[in-house]
Amino acid sequence: MSEVFLIINHIFAGSIFSSLGTIITGSSVIVSAVLISLLYIANKKTSALKSRLHKIMEEIELKDFVLDNSNKTFFFVDNDFNIIWITRSNKLRGAKDSASAIGMKCYKALFNYDSVCPFCKFSDSSEYIEHYFKDENRYIGMEIKPVYSINGKLKGYLKSVEDITEKKLTEKALIDAKKKAEESDRLKSAFLANMSHEIRTPMNAIIGFSELLNDPEITDEERKDYINIVQSNGHQLLKLISDLLVFSQIESGQLKIQMKEIVITEILKEIHQQFIEEKKRLNKNGIDISLDIKSIPDDLRINTDPIRIKQILFNLMTNALKFTTKGNITIGVEQENRWIRIYVADTGCGIHPDKLKKIFKRFAQADDSTSRKFEGVGLGLAISKELITLLGGSINVISEPDKGSKFWITLPKASDIKQ
Image (cartoon, rainbow, N blue to C red):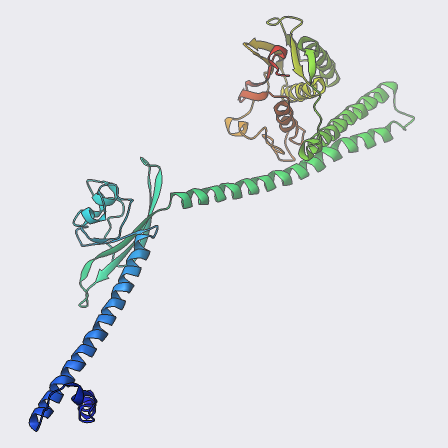
């Protein structure tokens, strides 16, 4: 009412009164003043109300804009899973648009299910659920929050749903990367432990038997045996150092490949003869080492680096001789269309299927403990794989525990090499 009195005073002051252009006297002046005052207040209140309503509408529009452009779809369902309200969404599988989704079952509108889905749960507290839809190969996450009336009665559920496929795939990639890093660290630790073992073992033998050679009382036969042991361990140590040097060159990208045409049968005959002598040196006379080159012409040529191809075959034959105690080892070659396949097959201990996937990895071995039966640091096959890749070929293996293994490398024939 204070506003009324202020306006009346203003009227009587002359500013409004004179503008009316009407002579108002006596009590009519008071009534007119009150009416004008009420109209003024009403108009003022209406303007304020309009301004407030406009502001509220702007806030609502802003909230709708934010919700509609969110990666999530927000909606409210009653206790029978009927959609009462939903934001604009292009992720509906069973409804044309958000407007047509009103009144539909949420599982039908969102996922085109004819019955309840994994997200249709009654809960008295907020809950977050993730589910993998195998038929669509996607992950969906949904947050569910119960809504209660003032008197505590459950009115329905406010839900937000989003496609989290990319997020889950990223998480999986990070987990896989973490596992690979941990496995790499484990393999490197095992490699260093094995390296220490592999260096110390031949060095101890070389030093120990070299000292025994100085004993004037040993017989000629013993002296010959000791010299053979020193030489054998020297060769073993030299092979280890050679592998490390090649591995270092591969890692640094400094390994040079020099391609030229070679007669493959000549290489195989050389490797075959070398390992017949190696078998005698290792006293493994119960093993037959054979050469199979009858399926190709004697003058068949391939374009490769002869030093590296010998190194690969040497590694494969070394492993075959190491892991075979009886039976036979065959090195051979087969021709298939534009490719030739050089193989090494043995009747050794074989490799368990679980170990086949990792044997070509650096530092990996079927048995990486220092107490294993066979020596080696797990570089031979890894180096062979790197070398055959540089030569433009591939390496593969099939194996069966207690029955043996067959490794083969595939290379193009010389006539198929693009210069």
